[in-house]
Image (tube, helix red, strand yellow):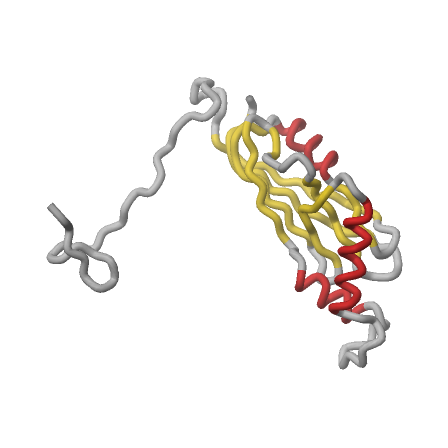
Length: 177
């Protein structure tokens, strides 16, 4: 027997209702009391040396170990408008060089920008940050980020001078496992 759908996707004659899309299911096989749901915050302070990618993967991994992360979601957020975050290749440094070159072509320093008070690298840095990411979400299972084999977490400095950058880490999921 088929179901007749009204415009908007509801069954004909039925009252629209919310559908539970996902149920809670243990993924670690541990008793529920061991892996209570919780959250943790941390702010990483990163000293940059000017334009480039700075690998933060091991610092984030160490923090997850320290808090006893189990299964959950990790969010990273950079508190700046002229630097960004990327998940990118961690094996060949030529990838990083090519990425920086491509961003430079998209937002060149020699363009006549209206916002130039903070120097010729500032507005291009804002554009590069807008084209990349200021936050990342990474699933975590059994305390390990589910990154691909060749993926790493990078802070990208878009300004010419060294800066101290802050990356906020937030983990939501099972803890204490």
